Image 1 (cartoon, rainbow, N blue to C red):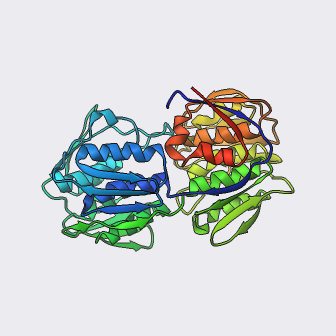
Image 2 (cartoon, rainbow, N blue to C red):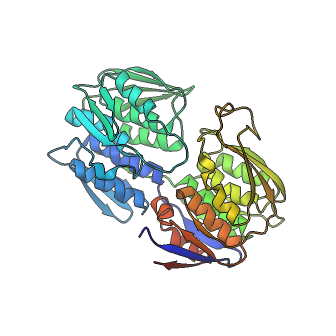
Image 3 (cartoon, rainbow, N blue to C red):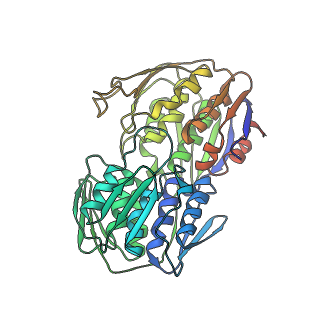
Length: 434
């Protein structure tokens, strides 16, 4: 599948309905959480994305039984747990590191290969490692992976230097069965983190979400299986709203609650988008065109870093000079050269533009962009470096003059539910070629 190429021809305004399912980022974390239950767990409204298959294969290698049936995933712990995630999974995604805590509870030891994921900047494992050490685990980070041992994890007070989503999830997954109380200060509060905490609570965990980014977890002796309905993917919802706006059309997005898109909706409204929002769907159009904006990404509830990739392409079709300041990942703008090749007028800077100084202001990280619109984009042959960049290139191709050839489309399919079918249903002309 990885050698597949998409040929895209612009086909005018994209219109129609898209239903988003549970998020890529939530489904894999819930699958890991299910390891902790004695009894089966079921995840409803699961997306059909590559990430699910990768995570399922890892869990099966550990001795977890996984059954995937279209929208639904059932998981149950087998009689024997193998504490090593095979090296074959090195670099595929960032899920193995989240398995350390659960494996320590189930087997007293663990080995996971080095994490992968998109090349969007250092996503250090040290927050995860320090948290596990604080809870009493012996952890060694080697060239090929991370080895850990612990007879019993103990609750601890852990202050995160930055509200990292992954580290918060590692602590949640490790603290629920630890002895005593764990307090996380500076925790991430993204909807996907809260969703994971609620699922663990259904399994019998004791978790309090306190003000000021504090999460308190009281360890229990055992957890049971549970089932849940995964809430709609806010990255996907935003991406399709932009697909409608950028082509002068209108896409109606079902399945993602408004509260997951608050900041995104207001950002697009400031640019001239008009919204229609109900309990079941939301839609955006821009009959009078779009105007430039200055946007800074931030941790939740700020403007999400994964939203800036489609936004960057939208900026090229908005009147005037737009500014984007990325504060979450230092190398998130790795996809810009592909867009420049398609005629996007984007300049990248290593200073903080469009917001106050962020943690990258003294570094050489290129983390701000100035975008000129309205630009005439042109079809090009581009290779996609990661999931979100892939989607943004499809958006650019949808408004470009001439045919575009996109390589590395397996990245998009790892993270977006049936993305080829969705775009085709909105009227985009895409041909697959080997």
